[in-house]
Image (cartoon, rainbow, N blue to C red):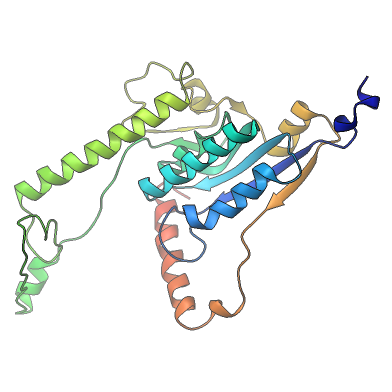
Length: 265
């Protein structure tokens, strides 16, 4: 029967989009909605793919950029009727897991790190150092909350309470997203939304992933041995790698390595 159906004559194609790196750090190479928009649009619409596969290796980053990318993935999947499969490599944590949970199914390696469903805010305090150096910090604002958590001023209980409230609101958004995306799959574990992480099959046990599997064999099992893979990746211009862009790239690399280092990577 398949032989005379025109739309089944060609080999099935899976579009592959790689989402690698920290999310929304701002430098070249980081993941953000702007850098991934055209890739995702092409992946879902070009050549009538039978599925879109996301290769994810991200320690997280901006909650807003994570949300924007995840929402774009779900919108395109709904508009085109194309299923989405996420394949986790080293890590899909925090915002990285937000991206993974935008897929219909999540697959991981036995040693992949998944989870970290929480929100973090980090910084430093340098006011004591400034005092010892005889440097006076001068800040003038219109609005009592304008200089909240200034690293060159002493931390106040009011500022900490305000930050805790903001982080709690972001955390609630994250939890709602995961519960909606993984509805009926999540384990009843009180640690699930504490920022805890799980490895491989233990993440599957928690419902954070659907199984252990790699992209090519899993897609062949699903769509047949003749399935083809079409990869979409961002083009990086040659000249911007020099001068100021080179310095920015180095700083971005340091930031990204620090994010991965949180998970021992």
